[in-house]
Image (spheres, rainbow, N blue to C red):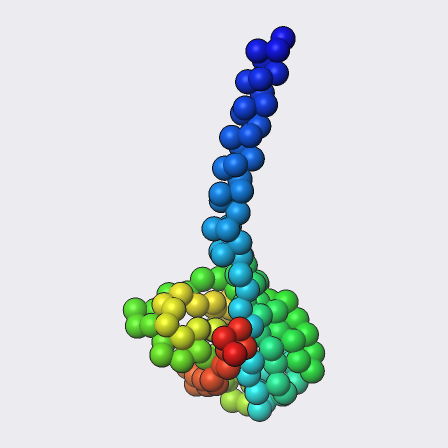
Length: 147
């Protein structure tokens, strides 16, 4: 009996030590970033209309983006990749006529960004414009985590 207890205790110690060793790496992957942007026009995210204003953009783990400003919203985005690393952080909108839709978020020096799927409203706007590509509107983001 004592032999089994000793082996169980040793295994528990090994597992606990391994978990502690991996904790800093896991924490580094889950670090969020906060960016700030002044958006001078109303825009749409999915079916929600967002007013113009100053927004804090939190890039959270698992491709979740939190927009906090005059109105707040969580957005599920998917990963996007570019061949050239952006020199500055930016947020990109698709513009159809006078309607703006959140499209992408890029951070300086990182070829991986976040991209929003086209909502039904954006697809309808695209059809109304005879499938013409949107005008891209880029705004600079200020990285608050590096201040």
